[in-house]
Image 1: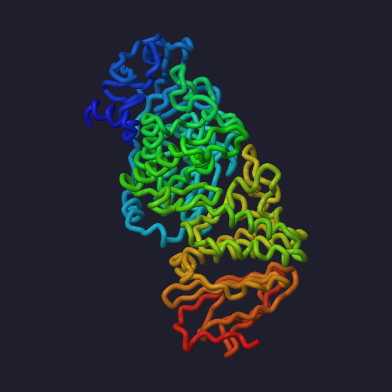
Image 2: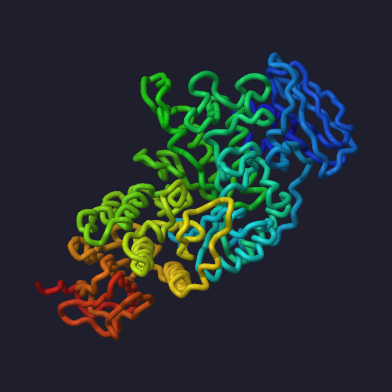
Length: 596
């Protein structure tokens, strides 16, 4: 593509591969290009010129350029920008690598990793993502095991995910960020994998390794806001270049700046970042963080300005999200997931925002409240486990038990469960069984499968020593079996609609019992769960067919694979007992209701 075409599309807000033109484009002749329309002059300093200022030339419309030889991969550099605010020293917004934490130099690099995942990508692109199982393991590399590099993590996490039955991993904190405590949600390097764990080629190795094992990779991506670090995007050329000017340019609750989605060059920057991760690092999906804060002008604010129609909707952000999803779907084979916590309509519809999936935050909050309620009082919270089915098919949902729910005093998944020590494990098994039977894709934060007592600490590794204790080993084994069942049996994922779901026991609130059936083309999976420490008999109206037990915990029946009687099926569950039944046998008669 001609340089003039790059520039034209960039200023139109429709350049989706800006990283190929702007930033440092390394080669025999290396080009440095930066957008700084309010700058009086721009220079580059780096290892290749002894850190002496070398001027760039203004080409047109705020784009400055220098083309020179003698630049080596691995050389560090920065821009010096002269403007009304004085002399600013800035990292390259389009840098392919950036030093981390207090070391903020950009690094000359290229996207020339030798990939081996061609067969995986072809297979991925042939799949229907809405009717395929999606079982996501959310992970933070720095605290999965301490001190691991991208490559060490890759070599251990890939076989672990295969063993545990996960189909995807969602990686936190990959885009370069200066503050460890932000967990990667205050980004300074939108085109740079963090150097905490190695080079950009090391990160590519991680993705390639996961793909070799059939594991998809989802990346947390943060287009909502960025930090006020002086060396990064903040007032890049002395003016509000990336952020909005005035009151709406800052999110005071977070102490960060909000992107100006009305500016075409900002749209080109952000969408090019999204496309870069997918094309250059073969990312399978982007989970877009903090979408609610983008959609609402008054989100988390006491002071705000309405839009031109007097409303609280951020019209420019809405259009940006639609453009983002259009570009991702038109030019890549990846999917997008919205972390959106309100009732904004049509998030996953083409006539709406155009995302592929949305986190079901309502389900998560309600069901965790039920889990944390004492079994004696769960009857008064029964609707917390059933209400989500009133809207479960309004969007394409992911059911998330994410890192947000196991920090800031909220406790781990195990510690949330009401009851004494032994009951907590049974309650978590029951909870996860209902989760995997519920319509929607699944997401589980790392460590939940181990039964961690302590909430997540990004500065410490997971409690792998817990597996020395039987209850924790049994929970991990249960999660593994549950995950594998979900991925193997089509009724659990093929039809996330009323046609594929039926309540079998929905109103037995006083006994804390639930039962559901998932169906697909004659196949049936029945799940029954007892959220009480007291044994329960559960009567289930079902078709006359033979079922076999796929998974059970505290099941009192010696046999569950007999043909049901004319009255249906009666299952005896121990305290916090669970059972997952499967039948492929065509029914011999119509549904027979249980006799009262």
